[in-house]
Structures are given as C-alpha cells and as structure tokens.
Length: 261
Image (cartoon, rainbow, N blue to C red; front, side, top):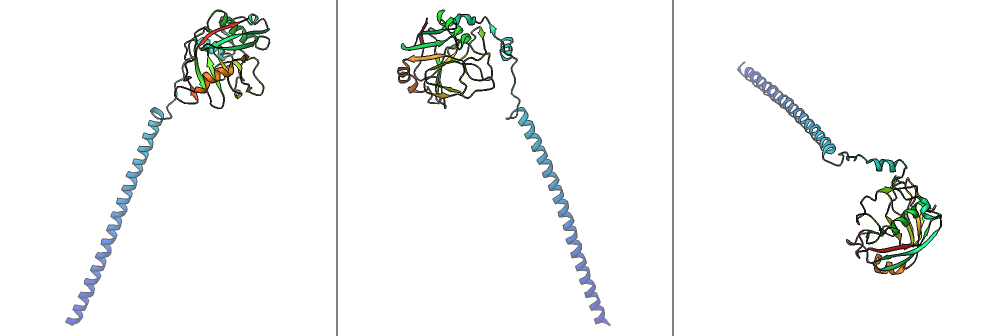
C-alpha cells in the first residue's frame, strides 16, 4: 500500500509541476502581449506626434510656407490689366518711318536703324529718351548666354530697376517664329505683361530663339547695322562677372551716347 501511495504522490506532484509551468508560460505570454500592445501604442503616438510636428513645420517654416504676395501699386495693376501708365510719348513721335543713327557702347560705335512703321509706340519712346539724353551714361547690366544671347541695357538705376515714370504696350513687331536674329534691338519687359515696356532694351548678339510667354513675344524696334562684331569681341565674349550664363558683364559696359535722325 505504501508503494502505491508513493507513486500516487509522485504523479500528483508531476501534474502540479506541469500545471504550474503551464500557468507560468501563460502568464508570461499575457505579460508579453501587454508589453507589445503598450509599445505599439506608444510608437503610434510618437509617429502621430512627429507627423503633426512635420506638418506644422512644413506650413510655418519649411518649403510649404505661403509666399507673401505684395500688394501691387496702381500703376502696376493698370499695366497688368492692359493699359499704358504715366506720360507715355505719343506714337506719332515715331513719324511711322525708318530712323537711322548711332549708339555707342564703351565708345564702340554701333550703326542702328529703328522701324517706326512697324513698332511706332516702341520707337517713339526710344527716340524720345535718346533725344533727351536719358540713355547717356546708362549701363548694360545683364549679359546672357542661356540658350539665348542678349545684352540688356537702359535701366533707370543701372541694375535692372528704377522707375521710368511710365510703361506702355502693346507688344509690336514681335517675330511670329520667336526667332530674333543677331543684331535685333528689342524692348525688355516683365514676364507675361504686354504693357510693361519702358526704357530697357536688349541687343541680340547671336541668332536667338526666345519663346513667347502668355503676353506674346518682345517688341522689336530695330537692328544693329554695323559694329556688332566689335561689341562681341570687346564685351560679350568676355562673359559675366561670376562666370555664370546670366549676369552682369565682366567688362563694365556703358552707353556713351545715342543719336537718331
């Protein structure tokens, strides 16, 4: 009887150990799942917080920050809406004829012709400014070689800005194929604004295609008929100050004088 009792005790103890082990494993599994759930929840909260922080940064300090739009002046608004601004010289001053003359840059004489019959408003403005001496000592502030080759001159402040006191349109005599042959003299203007012509003009020193924007092309007022090769050798071949394809000429360039008749 004692042997049977011992065996029964051993079996009972084995069953107890097995049950205890199973209970321990089950408890560990429950605890592990609880920890995993907590970790997942914390990770989710962190991800949401980071996403919210990124959104705040994007729209307040990062690349998504809205660009302030300046309030346009009355003159700028009028030009954008398709109207002349200020005391624009009458197109009649062009006499609707061809003008000849000379423009000197760094004392390099350039023979020029102006097409008053094709661009009367643009030529009238240019002739008026030339006759009053406006262009004398004005600089050429921009030289490009970015797929198009122009030397831009005639700004009020010598750096591409300043207020002439008037602006005008529409675009006249722009090439239908967007090709501006070497020697072309055309008026510079703001992008997409046909009524922003003023004192600035550019000389095309190599055949160039300038794609029209929403306003069209650029008003061609005339041509350089002589001296372009000398200008290229003395100024444009030297490139820009910083070696870029669009910047101030390395050789400082000034309009010595402009005469037309």
